[in-house]
Length: 127
Image (cartoon, rainbow, N blue to C red; front, side):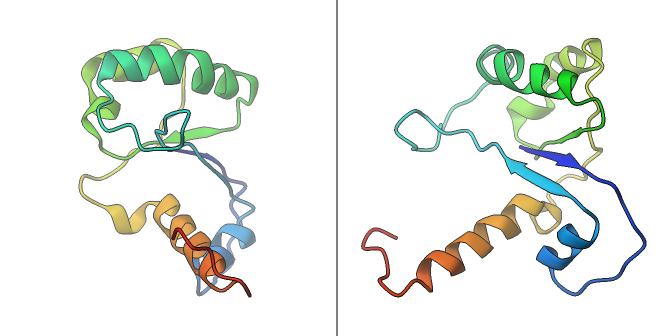
């Protein structure tokens, strides 16, 4: 899931980083992680609503009315109950085509982070 704020300008750029910077887009990655930073493998719609959306995402978006929620097409994100939950709270959601990881900005952010970590003078031992 990514929260995006977009003050779009009509500029052309050649890399994802340039596009994001040129359009003044802030990408706030919110991947499903447990407290020990391991991916949460099973997030169903109720857990997603109760543990992620209700206490964290919805209050943040309600405090920042100019922000839009971008989700991937994980089952927990696209469930009817989640759609209704977000709609009832007037959360703006970016329409997203199925099976489009190449369009998801967080994938490019992870790639950029990986390249920067691997380029460090003393490479990490656990990457």
